[in-house]
Amino acid sequence: MSWLRFNNGLFTASDFDIRRYGGSGNDELGYKRSENTGLNIVDPRSFGRGRSAFYEGNEGNDTIIGYASDDVLVGVNADETNAGNGEYDRLNGGGGYDTFVLGDVYEAYYLGNGYATIEDFQQGIDMLAGHGSSSDYTFDTSQNVIGGANNDTILAYRGDTIAVFEDTVVNLNVDDFYFL
Ligand SMILES: [Ca+2]
Ligand SMILES: [Ca+2]
Ligand SMILES: [Ca+2]
Ligand SMILES: [Ca+2]
Image 1 (spheres, rainbow, N blue to C red):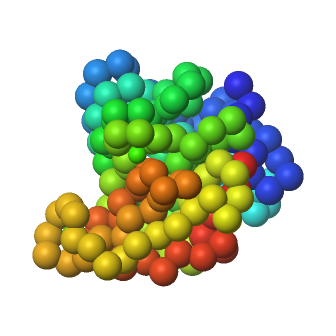
Image 2 (cartoon, rainbow, N blue to C red):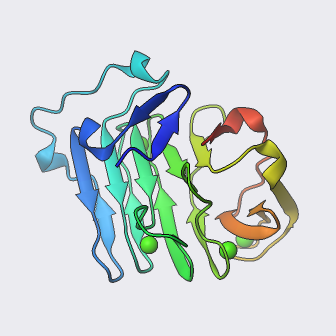
Image 3 (cartoon, helix red, strand yellow):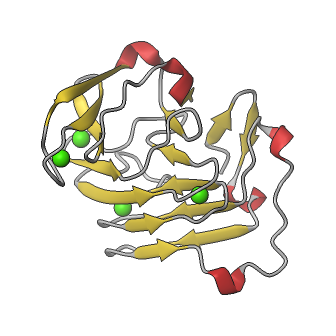
């Protein structure tokens, strides 16, 4: 599986020191501090950012909560086609340089029904990984669709909502993305 390509490099889940996977149902995944022993953070120069933990929620509506580590959060089963269809995953990266994965080299995730709710995107620190190129993406900050009273940012791939930044206005730009 070499479906994640950041910058000019390819990496797979096995490159990460910490890996957590959900099953086919609705799962909660998180970094467990007790398992931090021996954590060996991969050289951050490899892809321009540090990384140390990888989460893949797989099917179902999953909640993934990262930690202070540099986390890669995948809500879907990235190995299937139409990944994320009908799924409503919640992603929270915590501190560190986190990457929220919304697509891969093959397709955008969450097409049709479903989207990822991103709780804590830190612009300039965190990144989105998305299929295609910048021209495939639009965002809308004018609506309140989930969470509290504040507006949310709705990110669409070719008009299909794939992520909602809950209660946050994020003026997304190309620097926020790895395009895969
Ligand atoms: Ca999921
Ligand atoms: Ca993190
Ligand atoms: Ca969708
Ligand atoms: Ca809201």
